Image (tube, rainbow, N blue to C red; front, side):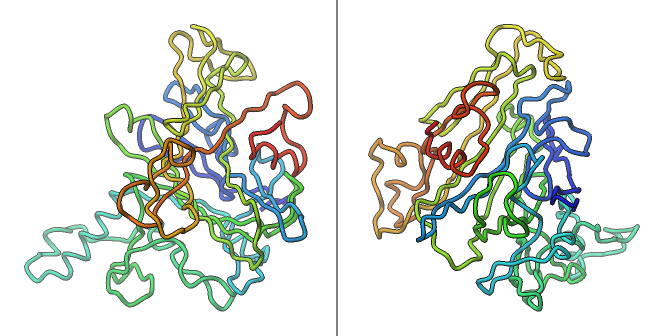
Length: 370
């Protein structure tokens, strides 16, 4: 980590037609990697400059505790897991240790599984199936499956398959990461290492596990799509009221000077597209798409679980039931939020309608209020 908490480690997920750059504090966007933006296509043009989570709520004393990504020049989130003793703390040394982005492919995991399946099968000739032997990939060895209880961390962190059911992650015994897609990244980050220089909000004590993944598939809806799974854990003891989680995105379709944004409520989606038929290049240093520029969308597939009420809630066409998940399916308390609200803000204009500068601005944006 740098002196101001800016992460040094990034990785690029490049499984299909698109590339997405992820930082070890969960920020999606440009950095020291090969990409000049967060989400790029084969011609080098981008549809999204940066993205990340916002979250926050109020303490019983009405203090606004809030953490947010914006452009990563100032930060509220830092690499690493928190302690589980209620103090939700982390040392700079532990954060430095987790200043990395783990990258794994389904092919690596499949080969690992095949090797240990063969070892355990008397009818499998290991010398014939693996004539050159097998060396466990470093990323499988380094997978952050388990925390250090002596440092107060959770015993289990990143998901893994316990091949021999001994409760420990030991790749040499056949254990392997549990991931989605044909390729995935993994980061663990928190909001407690330092004060929030980006938003100015109070600390929450939240630990986030983030897994971006994609499929190597010729179907258009998969070939140009990246999925991002978040697991959000409150490692602290405080209860925050009116707690909200938001997904921020700076959507730039090539040249951003003439972009238009919108919301498709029924599909739980926000989107951006070019304001005219030609997307010029050169503005803000961006590569344009020229003729027939694309549209770009972000969809909330499965939001956080609703509070349990012991009911299978109906599909009445009101938010969140209108675009959430798990409604009227005969399953109790599996209902999830969809897109509850959306808002945009501008590069220039009145303070209320431009980049948020203080915690109250971030909170207002999460309420879709300028």
